[in-house]
Length: 579
Ligand code: SF4
Image (cartoon, rainbow, N blue to C red; front, side, top):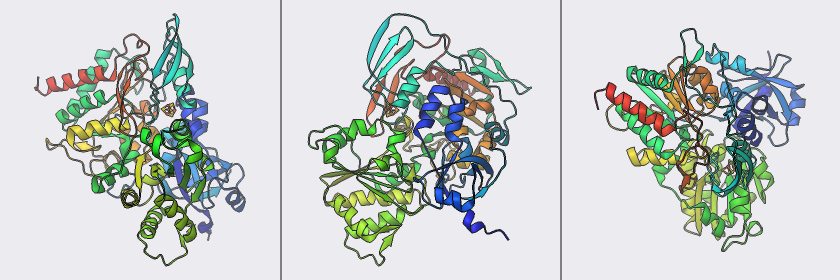
């Protein structure tokens, strides 16, 4: 009998800087992006122990893939890392255990040496049920013109919403970007590339054909009106004004509106609803915070300007990086961990235990073991002492914390730790948000319905029931019969089981660029690039509202998200006799 114990590993998924750059520069079907999300990182000791050559077979409960292997000391023995994307989707655990959030970290997998072919994107899309692979990315034609400098441009990539970028324009072409990180440079310099410029409708033969905007909107209205229980998903890469129209549309349809929080900081939002929060703006962090703890967050890769903007510069009270202590708590030795003064590498799935132990030490409760979560008790005493004696402390938390086993219970415990610490000093917790306006989408849903995401209107009033109205559960259980996807790409990020259902129902995609979700779409409506070709409001990760500017005119005939949604809402209301 094969000894599979030695092949058992814990899989961690996460974002990576190269992935963001490649996606913006070469598009999601470009070789560089695909290379950036289709590898597995393993500790060299494990590679040697298992006799792996250049690739391995990764088997999970729901499927298997073959990937090239990269050796890395950053991952602990017994754990592996795969960047978030189509390959990781095959392996992640779709079960949400009534929390609404699938398990994206600490997933049980078997790793086996193999000589099999590397799994290709086409193989994966075929498993999702994609029959035709007919994406047609084109570059938007750019008008020539004068050279000019535009100041105070906002980068619409991550939740940092850096709002001080200076760009050089030559006509409609962005020639240079000052102040941005590598991802924003890739996004702005290539905003015109890999675009969808014409609406598309899938014909009976399964192929996409060009349509007029009126036809595409009409088809959308028809699909949504016929649907008994539609899902309106995404909303994190568009304006807050567009989200507000989306909420109205969901209410009229008696369907569900959900944003990408369900796949990232859902546990943080749920925990805050249970025990409150301890928040601050990033400006306060820059001026006052002298102890910063990144917990399960790889800011250097996911929010590349974070250090340069809030940690290295001199604040009014704290005089820059030299006066700040940076601590990183993570399972992997990430790029952020390499910047830290103290790195605490914890055992997989043990965050809850570690936070509880810290709360116990703060309350002088004895711990009858010399090691918690792989961290020595001496180290824990040192850590709690640093927290207690901070002038002002801040936890920056990421998906490394939200997506592990205990999910929102871990975040609840961390918020309680921040509350406890506020009896000694000042301590706050700020979630590191991924999509640039996921916070705004939460805000709009909160002020309209009282719930931050996963809201359904089938009973004519808003309800949010984690495990029932949450998108992964709705898709897994085949509850919804049509979907409108706007400003997000669930096929790139959802577990395979959820995508399988999505590919069986009518799907409308509203997006400026080709995404993996367009491969299963029945209607595609092109839209403008927010913050470049259209304006609106977005909310930074700390809840500060920022106005996004229009820098260049949109491509001819391409409407904004807001214009498209208003037309759809109007059409659906007419269908239902409400206008
Ligand atoms: S840190 Fe985020 S918002 Fe700031 S420039 Fe980079 S990608 Fe854009």
